[in-house]
Image (cartoon, rainbow, N blue to C red; front, side):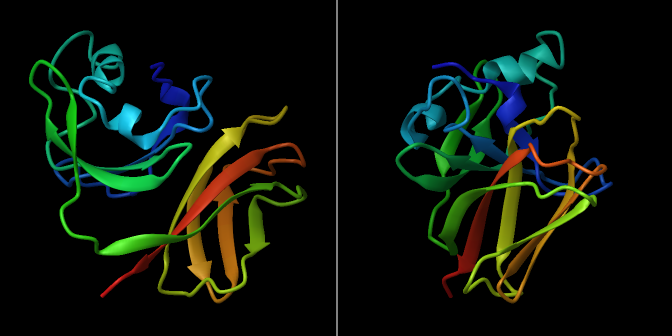
Length: 174
Protein backbone atom coordinates (compact mmCIF):
# COMPACT_ATOMS: atom_id res chain seq x y z
CA UNK A 1 0.00 0.00 0.00
CA UNK A 2 1.95 2.98 -1.25
CA UNK A 3 -0.02 6.12 -2.01
CA UNK A 4 1.78 8.40 -4.47
CA UNK A 5 0.36 11.91 -4.91
CA UNK A 6 1.94 12.05 -8.38
CA UNK A 7 -0.85 9.75 -9.60
CA UNK A 8 -3.76 11.65 -8.03
CA UNK A 9 -5.15 14.54 -10.02
CA UNK A 10 -8.15 16.84 -9.76
CA UNK A 11 -10.09 16.55 -12.99
CA UNK A 12 -12.65 19.31 -12.57
CA UNK A 13 -11.78 22.95 -13.11
CA UNK A 14 -14.27 24.84 -10.94
CA UNK A 15 -12.94 28.10 -9.52
CA UNK A 16 -15.54 27.77 -6.76
CA UNK A 17 -13.64 26.58 -3.68
CA UNK A 18 -16.90 25.35 -2.13
CA UNK A 19 -17.72 23.06 -5.06
CA UNK A 20 -17.12 19.36 -4.63
CA UNK A 21 -14.17 18.02 -6.59
CA UNK A 22 -13.71 15.08 -8.91
CA UNK A 23 -10.36 13.31 -8.56
CA UNK A 24 -8.68 10.51 -10.50
CA UNK A 25 -6.15 8.08 -8.99
CA UNK A 26 -4.18 5.75 -11.26
CA UNK A 27 -3.09 2.85 -9.05
CA UNK A 28 -1.57 1.03 -12.03
CA UNK A 29 1.03 3.78 -12.39
CA UNK A 30 2.20 3.59 -8.78
CA UNK A 31 5.10 1.34 -7.82
CA UNK A 32 2.72 -1.09 -6.08
CA UNK A 33 0.34 -1.58 -9.06
CA UNK A 34 -2.66 -2.03 -6.75
CA UNK A 35 -6.26 -3.23 -6.99
CA UNK A 36 -9.16 -0.79 -6.71
CA UNK A 37 -10.22 -2.46 -3.43
CA UNK A 38 -6.79 -1.86 -1.88
CA UNK A 39 -6.90 1.81 -2.85
CA UNK A 40 -10.47 2.16 -1.54
CA UNK A 41 -9.41 0.76 1.85
CA UNK A 42 -9.71 3.12 4.82
CA UNK A 43 -6.82 5.52 5.35
CA UNK A 44 -5.22 5.05 1.91
CA UNK A 45 -5.40 8.80 1.12
CA UNK A 46 -4.37 10.01 4.61
CA UNK A 47 -0.89 11.09 3.57
CA UNK A 48 -2.33 13.25 0.77
CA UNK A 49 -4.72 14.97 3.17
CA UNK A 50 -2.03 15.51 5.82
CA UNK A 51 1.07 16.28 3.72
CA UNK A 52 -0.61 19.25 2.12
CA UNK A 53 -2.09 20.52 5.40
CA UNK A 54 0.56 19.69 8.01
CA UNK A 55 -1.61 17.17 9.86
CA UNK A 56 -4.83 19.18 9.83
CA UNK A 57 -8.16 17.62 8.89
CA UNK A 58 -8.68 20.57 6.57
CA UNK A 59 -7.10 19.43 3.32
CA UNK A 60 -7.84 19.15 -0.38
CA UNK A 61 -10.34 16.28 0.05
CA UNK A 62 -13.80 16.97 1.43
CA UNK A 63 -16.74 14.71 2.22
CA UNK A 64 -18.71 14.23 -0.99
CA UNK A 65 -15.75 14.50 -3.39
CA UNK A 66 -15.73 11.79 -6.07
CA UNK A 67 -12.56 9.77 -6.72
CA UNK A 68 -12.28 7.70 -9.89
CA UNK A 69 -9.94 4.84 -8.92
CA UNK A 70 -8.23 2.98 -11.77
CA UNK A 71 -6.82 -0.22 -10.26
CA UNK A 72 -4.98 -3.10 -11.88
CA UNK A 73 -8.18 -5.16 -11.80
CA UNK A 74 -11.04 -2.71 -12.38
CA UNK A 75 -12.00 0.94 -12.33
CA UNK A 76 -14.72 2.43 -10.15
CA UNK A 77 -16.03 5.68 -8.74
CA UNK A 78 -15.91 6.20 -4.98
CA UNK A 79 -17.12 9.05 -2.79
CA UNK A 80 -15.18 10.50 0.16
CA UNK A 81 -17.39 9.59 3.13
CA UNK A 82 -15.20 10.79 6.03
CA UNK A 83 -12.07 12.85 6.62
CA UNK A 84 -12.10 12.70 10.43
CA UNK A 85 -9.21 10.57 11.76
CA UNK A 86 -8.91 8.66 8.46
CA UNK A 87 -9.85 9.51 4.89
CA UNK A 88 -12.55 6.95 4.06
CA UNK A 89 -14.16 6.33 0.68
CA UNK A 90 -17.33 4.42 -0.15
CA UNK A 91 -18.53 2.93 -3.42
CA UNK A 92 -20.84 5.19 -5.38
CA UNK A 93 -24.36 3.82 -4.99
CA UNK A 94 -26.10 3.03 -8.23
CA UNK A 95 -24.30 2.92 -11.53
CA UNK A 96 -24.78 6.11 -13.51
CA UNK A 97 -21.89 5.56 -15.91
CA UNK A 98 -19.48 2.85 -16.89
CA UNK A 99 -15.97 2.75 -18.33
CA UNK A 100 -16.20 2.06 -22.05
CA UNK A 101 -12.57 2.69 -23.04
CA UNK A 102 -9.34 2.73 -21.06
CA UNK A 103 -5.82 2.85 -22.48
CA UNK A 104 -2.57 4.78 -22.68
CA UNK A 105 -1.19 7.03 -25.40
CA UNK A 106 2.23 8.53 -26.04
CA UNK A 107 2.39 12.17 -27.06
CA UNK A 108 3.24 12.98 -30.68
CA UNK A 109 4.76 16.37 -29.84
CA UNK A 110 4.88 19.53 -31.92
CA UNK A 111 1.90 21.22 -30.26
CA UNK A 112 0.32 21.56 -26.81
CA UNK A 113 -2.88 19.99 -28.17
CA UNK A 114 -2.80 16.22 -28.64
CA UNK A 115 -5.60 14.22 -30.26
CA UNK A 116 -5.92 10.44 -30.12
CA UNK A 117 -8.39 8.49 -32.24
CA UNK A 118 -10.60 6.13 -30.25
CA UNK A 119 -13.24 4.55 -32.46
CA UNK A 120 -16.65 4.69 -30.80
CA UNK A 121 -16.06 7.61 -28.44
CA UNK A 122 -19.04 9.97 -28.38
CA UNK A 123 -19.07 13.72 -27.84
CA UNK A 124 -21.32 13.12 -24.80
CA UNK A 125 -18.79 10.81 -23.08
CA UNK A 126 -16.87 11.94 -20.00
CA UNK A 127 -13.08 11.70 -20.33
CA UNK A 128 -10.54 11.34 -17.50
CA UNK A 129 -6.91 11.87 -18.51
CA UNK A 130 -3.83 11.79 -16.30
CA UNK A 131 -0.09 11.56 -16.81
CA UNK A 132 1.38 8.11 -16.47
CA UNK A 133 5.00 8.95 -17.40
CA UNK A 134 6.37 12.49 -17.42
CA UNK A 135 8.73 13.14 -20.31
CA UNK A 136 12.02 15.03 -20.37
CA UNK A 137 10.24 18.41 -20.58
CA UNK A 138 7.64 18.25 -17.79
CA UNK A 139 4.12 19.30 -18.77
CA UNK A 140 0.76 19.21 -17.02
CA UNK A 141 -2.66 18.42 -18.44
CA UNK A 142 -4.89 21.48 -18.76
CA UNK A 143 -8.08 20.03 -20.31
CA UNK A 144 -9.41 16.98 -22.08
CA UNK A 145 -12.60 16.46 -24.05
CA UNK A 146 -14.35 13.87 -26.16
CA UNK A 147 -15.66 14.43 -29.66
CA UNK A 148 -16.82 11.80 -32.12
CA UNK A 149 -14.08 9.11 -32.22
CA UNK A 150 -11.47 11.46 -30.71
CA UNK A 151 -10.06 12.42 -27.32
CA UNK A 152 -8.38 15.82 -27.37
CA UNK A 153 -5.99 16.71 -24.53
CA UNK A 154 -4.38 20.11 -24.03
CA UNK A 155 -1.04 20.18 -22.20
CA UNK A 156 0.62 23.19 -20.55
CA UNK A 157 3.01 23.32 -23.52
CA UNK A 158 4.44 21.07 -26.23
CA UNK A 159 4.90 17.72 -24.44
CA UNK A 160 7.42 16.46 -27.01
CA UNK A 161 7.27 12.76 -27.90
CA UNK A 162 7.96 11.15 -24.53
CA UNK A 163 4.97 11.76 -22.25
CA UNK A 164 2.65 8.80 -21.67
CA UNK A 165 -0.87 9.55 -20.48
CA UNK A 166 -3.73 7.29 -19.47
CA UNK A 167 -7.30 7.95 -20.47
CA UNK A 168 -10.58 6.50 -19.32
CA UNK A 169 -13.89 7.20 -21.07
CA UNK A 170 -17.16 7.01 -19.12
CA UNK A 171 -20.56 6.73 -20.74
CA UNK A 172 -23.88 7.32 -19.02
CA UNK A 173 -25.86 4.13 -18.45
CA UNK A 174 -29.31 5.75 -18.28
